[in-house]
View 1 (cartoon, rainbow, N blue to C red):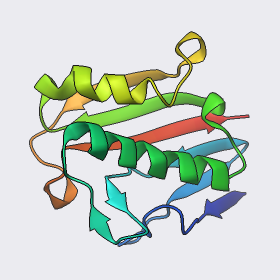
View 2 (cartoon, one colour):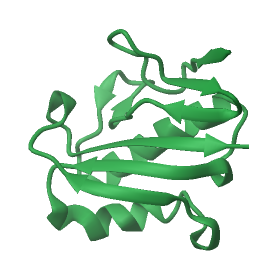
View 3 (tube, rainbow, N blue to C red):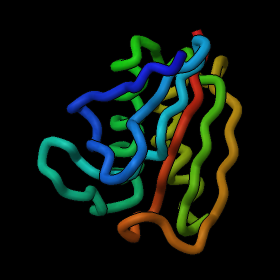
Length: 126
């Protein structure tokens, strides 16, 4: 059985997808971008602020599903410029304990939705 996750603390879906789904104890989040759900604006001031907003959105969905960031076992990161990797990684490290950090991949892509610089999705298991 699949449970749909929704929280007003993260951007509402703008298409035929959900913020997250839980199936068989596994949470899958949709990719999140740096859209601030309180102001209805993209956070594009700099890559650090954008990454922080993305991860706050991810965390909001994870917590809405009654999981924690410690439950995240896999993260997928899409970025528009690999030269930003170290700056992104510094912010990412604030959301995960290094000793128990999830597996992840980070891939540079040609273009992301709304021309953002970063998108992240995660998988969590209790």
